Structure formats: structure tokens, C-alpha cells
Image (tube, rainbow, N blue to C red):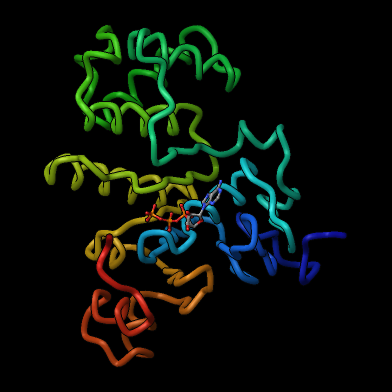
Length: 250
Ligand SMILES: Nc1ncnc2c1ncn2[C@@H]1O[C@H](COP(=O)(O)OP(=O)(O)OP(=O)(O)O)[C@@H](O)[C@H]1O
């Protein structure tokens, strides 16, 4: 099966087609379809337990759907060779605590095929974005929770991927740094990077080009923040979130 709906248009960066995921008798994702186009900043919004992380895991190929299919950059997922083409920041940090930040970065850089001078430049650039350039030689065990989040973000940016997939990237990050990270995400988007992220922060949702609202594994709304506010008759994304079946986070 090819991934092109029309022969002239390039494949979407992310193409989720009628995806269903079950755990035991529970349907966690129910027939979800959405596309993310090149250069878009796409936000997934939904109450705790609604299925956002599960969808992210299917997009990145960490998990496999029970029904439907997922394509990334025209390739059907999961596919190991796609690892070099996207950056992923998980909700829980996957870091080697006993190693220094630099050792962690070097390890991941080598997995991405970065070498020598270019590798060092990328490590320095990624650490500057998250303002950790002075903490390169500290062991990760000596990092605070927020510093670990920032290091995880730096790891996902190392190889300048075409697609960045970020699961709650700014949790535990202070407002000043949060703002500078969002500025950098904006710059990356201008350079053509596609970004898919999950968030519980409504002003972050407002900064996305488009949003997908998930409730109990179903996609309840899809559109720009303005479209979603208009269609729900809401003045803010927070109100729209509640109209579309959101709720307070447990
Ligand atoms: N491996 C698994 N086995 C069984 N159930 C799972 C598994 N992974 C997720 N679930 C269940 O799937 C549902 C959706 O979880 P998911 O982590 O995708 O939600 P979420 O929207 O990302 O939540 P949060 O905002 O709290 O991160 C939850 O009910 C969760 O308990």
C-alpha cells in the first residue's frame, strides 16, 4: 500500500490511519485518524489517561497498533531505520544516571551516526538550547528533576531530526526556561522541523498550529486553536477543552 492520497502531494510527516489500541479488554485508542504536515507544530491535548502517550508511542513505533496503521515520512511504522529521522522525548527520562551528561549525549550521538567535530558542535548547541552548557561534565545523578527533563530534550534535538516528538516537554521546567524552549521550538519550526507534542498547559496549546483533543481514546476535536474555540463557542482553549470533554487532571 502506498502512502500518497494524491500523487502530487508529499506524504504527511505523520499519518495516523484509523488506529485502535487495546490493553486487555480496554480500548485505549479508538479509531483515531490524523495527519501532521511538514513544518507544523501539532499539540495533543487531553485529560490524564485519555491516550496521548499511547498515541505518541504508536507514532514513534515504540508500540504497535491493534488496528489501523501509522506512517512517518511516508514509511510504515514501526521501522527501526526511522530512529535517525525523528527525535523523541519520553515522559519519563531515559538517561544513564551514573554517566555524565556529556557521556549520555556522546552515546546517543553515536547511535545517530554523529562523529568528531560535528558531534561536539551538536552536543554544545543542544545543551545551549536547554541552558545546561555549564553542566556537561556533571553526572546525571547530580542533576535536579528539571535538569534531567532539559537534558532529555537536548538528546532529542542532537541529530537535528526532521520530526520532533515531545511528551510533555516542559513539565518541571521553570517559566523563564519554558519560554526560551518555546522560542527555540518556534525557530526550529521556521527551519522546517515538524513538532508533535503533548501538553496540559493551555497557553502552550494556544501556541500550536493545530491541536488534536483526545478524550477516552477518541479524537473529539481537530483544528487550529481558533477553529476549536469557534466550534465549541469558547473564548479560550481551556473552555474548549472542557466543552470537548476534558476535565481537571487527576
Ligand atoms: N502498557 C499498558 N498496559 C495496560 N494499560 C495501559 C498501558 N499503557 C497505557 N495504558 C492505559 O491506557 C490509558 C491511556 O494512557 P496514556 O498514558 O496514553 O494516557 P495519557 O493521556 O498520556 O495520560 P497522562 O496525561 O497522564 O500522561 C490509561 O488508562 C493507561 O492506564
